[in-house]
Every structure is written in structure tokens, then in C-alpha cells.
Image 1 (cartoon, helix red, strand yellow):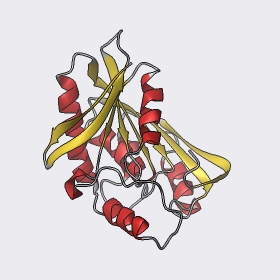
Image 2: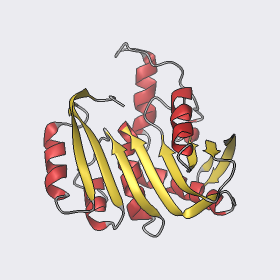
Image 3: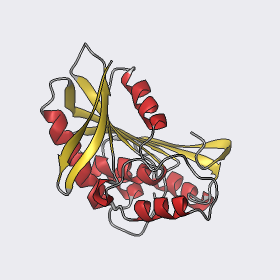
Image 4: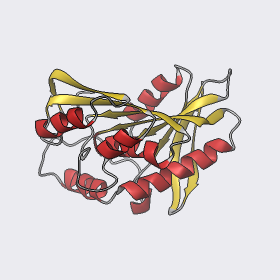
Length: 215
């Protein structure tokens, strides 16, 4: 395996990105792995390595670079902690169009790397980034072939670029993994997602006995 961390140019600056892929047999299909709200940490790098061990060129960008943040440190279980307030402020600073411009930066970089096949792309997102992973299929329909949203939030909204509408329109394959108990992604959202995507090229799966963050 080959791994490295470098700054990748985006429309708004440069995102420090962890890249890992097999050392032979390329070019490898690209997986853009979008972080959850607690930010980049070794747990996510290990997950990226696991994806790469299946033959993928994995890119894990720091989405908080605009605020000058990289790693927030260990998760603080206290809901009133300054750490959590900072995390929520950073999470709420991101929007779909911003992250789509970051994904474009990732794909532009991968286009120039002989180890990557940036014409065959998968996206995966957890929690806050589930919607970003899905919307990438709408933003880059000629590249993104499959997406996975793991306990994603804000998947059904009133906006024209709501993730559930993107999934209905896109030829990509979609997978939505949802918890049984999740106040960030309530049951009514999951039920509507299932109704809206009935017959679409995807699957909505709800895991019994789980809470938000189960993965």
C-alpha cells in the first residue's frame, strides 16, 4: 500500500488530504471518503486503508480547511463542552455547493495521478457527509458510479438539490444505511426516503437495534 498526505488545491484554498491506494495493479477506481463532523482522525485513516485494501484509490479530504482546522482531538462526551460547540459550528459552516467544489478539486488532482482512475468514482459519507456523498452523483454524473450514505442527515429537504431528489434523478447506484433510533435522521425521514426511492437504483436499509453513529 502507498499512502501520503498532501494539500490539494480547491476553489477556496487547499484541503489537506490523506490518500492511500495499492502499490500495484492500477489505475484504481477512486473513492472520495468524506469525513464526519468530528473531523479527520486516525480512525478515519484506518477506514480509508480498509477501502484501499479492496483495490481503491481513496481520498480523505479535510473539509474544515476554510476555518483553518484539521484535527479536533478526542471526542468529548459532554454535550455542553466547548469541543462540541466548536464541532457543530464547523459542521454548520459547510454547504453542498462548498463540498462539491472540494470534490472537484479531488477529482482534478486524481485526473493527473496515473495510479487513479478518476472516471470511475465512488463516494461515501458518514453523518453530516452522507448528503454530500449523494449529491456528488448529481454534480459529477459522468464520473460517480456509486454512493453510500451511512446514517446521513438532511437527506430529505425542500431544496431543489435535496439528496433524495438527486438519487431519484441520477443513474448512479445508491446505498443508504440508517439507524433504528436516530434523532438526527428521524423515522419520518427514513420512511419518506424509502417511498421516494422505491424502484430507483438504490437501497435504503435500516439496521435494527442501532443508534446514530453505529458504524
